[in-house]
Image (cartoon, rainbow, N blue to C red):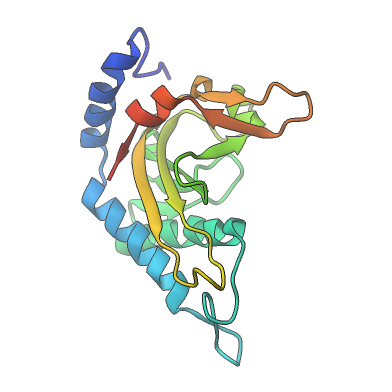
Length: 193
């Protein structure tokens, strides 16, 4: 699929992003509501027969909190709209699949960095057969770390927009495993909800 930003300068990206968000079947308000509900659900949950609580008895690393968001957000949309939305099933799927039209499916990225999101180095490369596409709608969530001094961390940013595989900048080092976004991409291709 051709990028909606093809032949557009960074100064034009925000208008394109806003149009893409307007065309999406989920409203920004509902996306934000589900993210915040899912975040709160993590800290309301009890684990095991002793009912251990996150933020009181255990303090998960950011990767674990991100995992919960990756699971709970798609699960909530699947429960709300069972014939329209579903969770990822295979490696080629995005995190949240729009059944009527895969172009509206969403990749979810989370980070405890207060400003930026990151991907694997592979995000900076075109997709191979059988792998999920790197271009499309993205939901980016930044949150505070959960620690004994911050037992109820907050969501810092919820952003939504469209990214192309070429937006991801792989680390230059041959052993580097991370990809990041430029400041222009973060500011104009992802809109804060």
